[in-house]
Length: 322
Image (cartoon, rainbow, N blue to C red):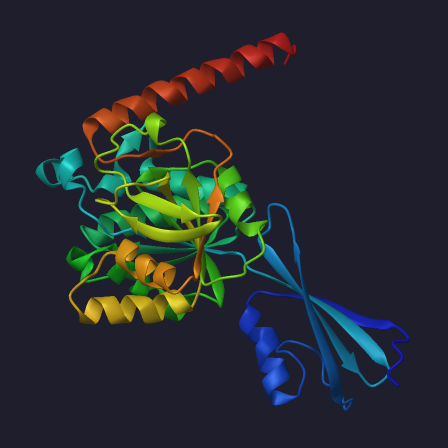
């Protein structure tokens, strides 16, 4: 009979792979002190941690001691490789992720959202005018104290799915994905990381399609309960709209490889493949403002909404005497 007598140590491991490594090798997780004790039992159980991702708590039973390890997912992939044709980026030579909105680039706004939700590491995938976008990513990450990896996707024109696949070597078993050209609030990240991961992927969806600026260009989602039954731009009928905020495990990469081998490089096609197998679930948004910035009209709408939010925030501060 194993009787835990004391908590010997506690460490935070950055990647879920660390816990799996220790189980597979019947040894201590990397970074722990040497011990001659034998790892004789392991127990895993999940618990959400607000603002800090989905946490896996692991009890390593070593000899007569139980060591508690908290293993938290802190990584977000930001897809920032596109040219932004509909926004006029190719004509202006300013990549869409670098486009300024009230003095802050779209890419920095995406990084601010994930950082505000407690994420401490970002993988930014660049393509069109890669050096310029990478420089913007480094500047923003430094100001936000984010650990940054920049990945160049030389096949970015084949679709955003190829950009996510380029990030595969740099992410742990579970990770977030957001779009550099989508304005999303930190609460969307919280919604994903606070929901139990029971499938290959989760997507924050907006169940109020009538509020979407350009519904014709939006990626639609058909739901069966919480499960995503189908996804695509031409989908009809549909129940919700894709906000561009995802949480995946590594099965998305198998789906991407299969679809890209067939000449289909869009992320939504790989998500559809997972959905067909019952492996994608929807997380309803909390009603906060979000926006897919594809056109000058989208940018103008986003500017007006943000200006109203800034004004309301200032008025609240004045009312509170701050």
